[in-house]
Image 1: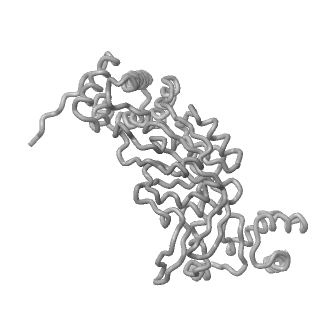
Image 2: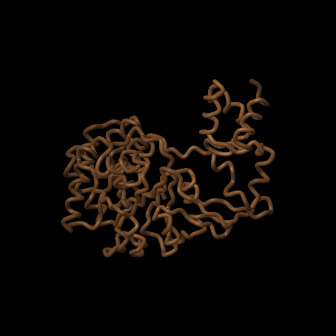
Image 3: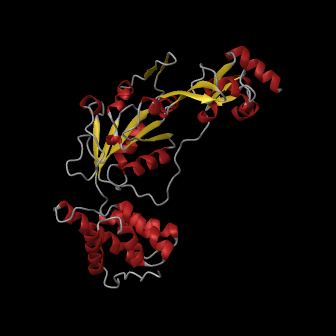
Length: 361
């Protein structure tokens, strides 16, 4: 069967636009493989499982500057499934988050917890394991409707509508991850109808976008949307109660247990080729003591799992445990930094306190 015959048959059956389901139906009735047909449709592909016989490489530029084009076509063909990370260790709420994503039901989910304890990473790895597309949006106080929903952009001297990440996620049936949601202003309320699973009306181009199957929203935050009383997470805001009510469930993410954290740090060290099991264990014990002291009100700072990973990476670069710890705790004030280093000195008998080198100048 020639290319022209296949194109003519598809056009007669489905018109100029058709989907993967249409192609599979055609293949079944004509005893031809799906791969054979899709290879011959390569120049007409407009998205994942979508073809348009009137669209060629020469007409894509015209479509991008058309007001009827929802987004630049090349963006739709990207693979947005996160890569699996071999260092990842599941813990805490990961199993529940994975079940929600795997269900493909619309069920907005809020994850809260202290910084650096794997909230975002766990969502990314759940999507990686389930081969689900993920669109991550980092929220700031400046994030507004144009950033989220989309707007008109200048393309080759013409204005064209381009989808924002929310519309891309809606149309693709992807997971929309709103990272650091508690940094948002009231401009985030443009997502109200989306959080109800109803889609959104794009008033600037007069088009209604409904969520595709599998679409869901997951938000992460250091607070529960009520602001930060102790000032640790400056910039976080009190979110609108009606907005928060649209998240049916909230998961409280804790730091991993010492056994789990040991696996995480060991995996990272192994991936960097600097395995030192004793050093990994001492770091985990050290962080655990600091966290317990923090929860008891004894210190104002904490060593996160992310910071332990930073230390292992510094050790892989410098080959010096003392220097790795020092450069990674320099972010704290002098008193806290010194107390953390002195505590590690007590945890690790072989540790030598770093001595500042004299300046050559």
